[in-house]
Amino acid sequence: MLRENDVGGWTRPAARLYPHQWSWDSAFHAIGLAHVDPSRALAELEHLFDAQWADGRVPHIVFDPAVADYRPGPALWASSATNPAAPRGVATSGLIQPPMHAIAVWRVLQVAKDLQHRVARLYPKLVAWHRYLAVRRDPGGTGLLSVYHPWEGTDNTPRWDAALARLAIGEPPLYARSDMELIDAAERPTKLEYDRYVWLVALLRDAAYDDVAIRKEHPFLIKDIQCSAIFAAASAALERIAAVVGAPARECLEIAGWRRRSCAAVQGQWDPELGLALDLDERTGEHVRVRTSAGLSVLLLPELESTILERTRDVLFGPDFAGATGLAHPVVLSTAANAPEFRPRAYWRGPAWPVVNWLLWRALREHDREADSGRLRAANLALLSAPIGAFAEYYEPYTGEPLGSLHQSWTAAVTLDWIANG
Image (cartoon, rainbow, N blue to C red; front, side):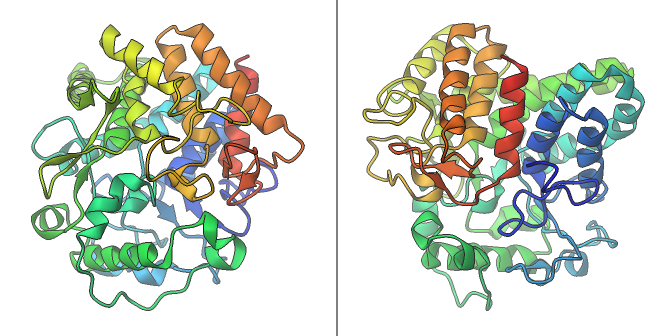
């Protein structure tokens, strides 16, 4: 499947629905490809980082100029026309996605030490990316990263409902949607949600994607617990890479500081009643008390208090998530089964996503919870091995029906990694 979706040096997430290069998708692609073609795995990330902005950000989409019929396309973003830091040779979005990339590079190094010379060339770009996040997305040094848009993580998750409901949007720019031509509307964000997404993009574009201006006035500003936890885990991976490539001691200390700060901050957002870490809405100053798989991402932290580890592990396997009654396979749901927002077919509002399950599996392994990680791996491989599996983007949790885009590259990629780590 990864070969079928190969576009020559990078991998499209899905042939029709996602024909461009997406940032965190490519990190997962590299993790899977590392086991069958490490050089090609690293090329995936090299291609992505060729589109890195001068300020260090890695855009969430790098547009393929050969694809003209994807909507909304690069014209909506106008990145290079509005911000001098955007690349000139390729069209990109102005948003970001969770920083999985150092985790992917470390996986490649684990299986192919002979690629160290290429990793050494990529390493400064990884540092610039992490520095952008630590400085521009967390100017107060809290250890928690801010997101400006639902597309910077988990699209229509109910985590964003209250913040989106407050928006008094004007007329959004005219736009078309490729997804509605390909996928059942019940499985995708609604028109009202999408109107808000496009209106927020227009605001960001009008602010020239300038982080200082956005922080002052942008109406959607949330400390994202999942993105912050991934940043902590990725900073730990970047420390390992830095040691391999012989980075300066001062830089190693800087990376370690990012890791420590985010580990402490994410744990500080953990709610003992829910057993989940919570996002913080910066415009209201209130925690987002919605039960989703993002709250389990505290497990990703390389340094985690044992009481938080145990309680969150129990929630993961409990009746809200992998232990919910009636599941086809005991995998982690995107939204808690008992939450009022739960909808089993609607994108991030209920279905099970293999990539999120992979993140939590990896987290349990990193904490030496072999029995628990093995249990989660087995459940996901059973789901993916079903005759109707099709390596879907996400799955209806009670029937195992594949939903969203079929033949999804990152689902195939994490399957490869699960198989390789049996």
